[in-house]
Image 1 (cartoon, rainbow, N blue to C red):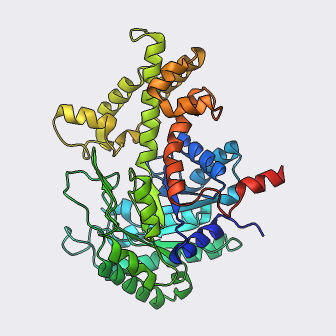
Image 2 (cartoon, rainbow, N blue to C red):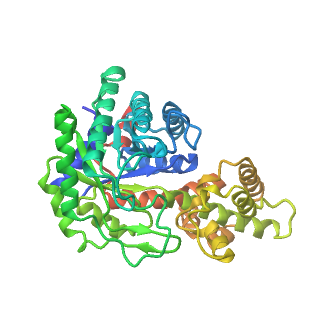
Image 3 (tube, one colour):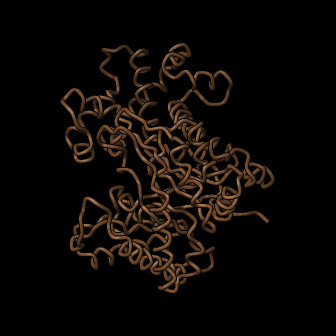
Amino acid sequence: MIKNAGNIFLDIVAGNRVGTTKGIYSICSAHSDVLASCFKQAKEDGTLILIESTSNQVDQYGGYTGMKPPDFVKFVHSIADRAGFPKDMILLGGDHLGPNSWQSLPAYKAMEKASVLIEEYVKAGYRKIHLDASMFCSDDKGDRSKTLDDDIVAKRTADLCQVAENSWKKYISDVPELIYIIGTEVPVPGGAREKEENVNPTDAEKAATTLTISKKHFLKAGLSAAWDRVTGLVVQPGVEFGDDQIFRYQRNKAKILSEKILEYKNLVYEAHSTDYQSETCLKAMVEDHFCILKVGPWLTFAYREALFALEAIEAEILGKGNYDLSQLANTLEKVMIKEPRYWKSYYKGDETEIYFKRKFSFSDRSRYYWPDPQLEAAKNRLYRNLSSNRIPLSVLSQFMPAQFYEICEGKIQLSPEDLIHSHIRKVAGLYGRACGMTNTESGIMKRLTLEQ
């Protein structure tokens, strides 16, 4: 019997709890080149792929990507088709689904919108659902420098779970049941905004309290079967990144938290903001039951790195004064300055520091700007220039040494797209190795061979 992505995901979670040291990485990106690269990596590794969209990226109104849930599913599947990747090995997840985008509204109104959001995600075919009702709404009482009351969060989470369960029964009861993630102790989206001395893991007893109160409200709402399908708790394992700093995983600090999850049936931890961790650190996190590793900004950071490297190659080939140069980096700077809303509240410092961060911050706020028509035109010109003027291998070695070796070994073609995808795959491949996902039981490559 050939298993699908959901079955394999649950097998990975179950195995992780008993010490298989396998995990899974979750791709949090809506960038077509990132997704294409990750499909290529997953196909080579012979494993499933987990792709997630967040509640602000994709919602019933289009989110900041302009895509509603069915649009995102169609978008992902179209990229999978081009990569020759089987759709039943794609697990789609919804991240931070709840009232996040409507915090300025009274709770009842925000929850109404969150309910529609979740219904649309489930109806579109998302199976891994992260329920997050942790944010204050406009009429919520309490100290907003602290977290929202646990009982309120748990009650709203259970309410949203009921919506998801009802939506599954109404629209897609012929497919496997939903998988839930709860909890929300995560870093600031996109990374830390200020210098910090250290990042502490979630207190183990606090995690236990979240689970106890959540279970109480699920059972009270008659959702015992759904509670059995809660497979992950979001916690802070003590990892983080800022503009130019990375807080590495320190397993000695997370030891008590790591051991606590084994007291609960079917559960592992989900770790957000794991970008830029070393392969050794990621592997240690998986071994310590931080089984689901989210990665996002690092993938688009790698995309930006590759484009900048190609632009440097372009300048060497055509000459730095050539009027036909793509001017990609300069175009990015102009577009970001013209529309600063995606970076202004994240980047602090004087003008020189902010100029540097717009290009090179690990937070990679530039990822919001690539769909801009001016940037798309600059990228297309870069591609044309490099396609019509052969890239000398000696110059490629200077600016993209890893890709130089892959060209010499015949693994990739000397084309801008292949070079970019190869660079992004260095990140995806690192996560695959850390999660033990290479040559796994899913056997996609074997299966594809048999089907041909």
